[in-house]
Amino acid sequence: MNRDVVLEMFDRQLRREARSAGAGDRVERTGDVVRHLSTGDGSTGDGWATVVWSDLDAATADAAIAAQVRHFTDLGREFEWKLYAHDQPADLADRLAAAGFVPEPAETLMVAQVPDLPTGIDLPESVQLRPVTTPADVDLLRDVHDQAFGTDFSGLRESLLTQLAADQLIAVLAMAGDIPVSAARMELHAGTDFASLWSGGTVPAWRGKGIYRALVAYRTRIAAERGYRYLQVDASDDSRPILQRLGFLPLTTTIPYVYRRSPIFIDRQ
Image 1 (cartoon, rainbow, N blue to C red):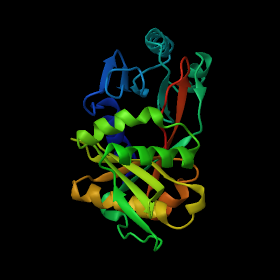
Image 2 (image 1 turned 90 degrees about the vertical axis):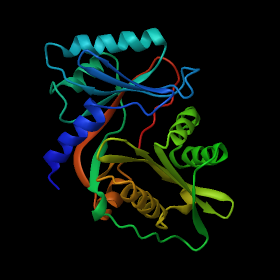
Image 3 (image 1 turned 180 degrees about the vertical axis):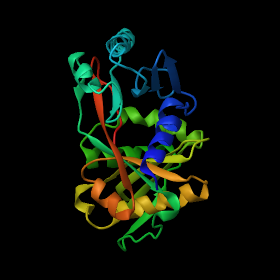
Image 4 (image 1 turned 180 degrees about the horizontal axis):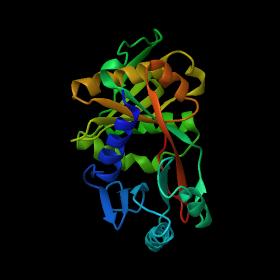
């Protein structure tokens, strides 16, 4: 896999040409900035808001940053500027910090070719996988994520239901009897070569038993069936070694820079 070629494809297909995921989700292009917003069912201000792409230089960056701050402040919303290591200008991180953005932990953009990934699912004897198909399943997934990541995922519920209804999301639970112990999602980016893995998380007592790898394999099978060429993930330090052993390659790093004005959920791997 040619890293430079795949990174250019990722930038073009998922950032510069980002597409809406359906009702309650929209992409906005203003000047040299692309924003991706989710408002759940569209009736509230809950959800996430992210600058996914910018084409800036030293002469335009500060004005563009200020414009985004004004826009979201007027809406009373917090938002994230998704900064990648190769984004320009080279001091964009410093400019965001000077404007009041706070960096969150760095993540590694990793990509694998779907045919190169293992698809065998090996689970503990007492654990079975269950597709997420109903609102009750979404609630279980949210509860697992809350336990696994120590983060409030409640604001994600409506967005997930919207994506499920639009067939743009695959989600799965790992169940130990009636108890959910792990969960993961995959976003299907129609019209692109990429599907994205998100929030593979296991509750502490069930870690180290191969469940995370099984959830990756489950989603890989579906990505192959749907004809996707690549799987992409923004990997945390915890998941990066596992993904690398499975065949994912690091392309670059990314840091979410968050501008906080009101409580809001921002999803990250």
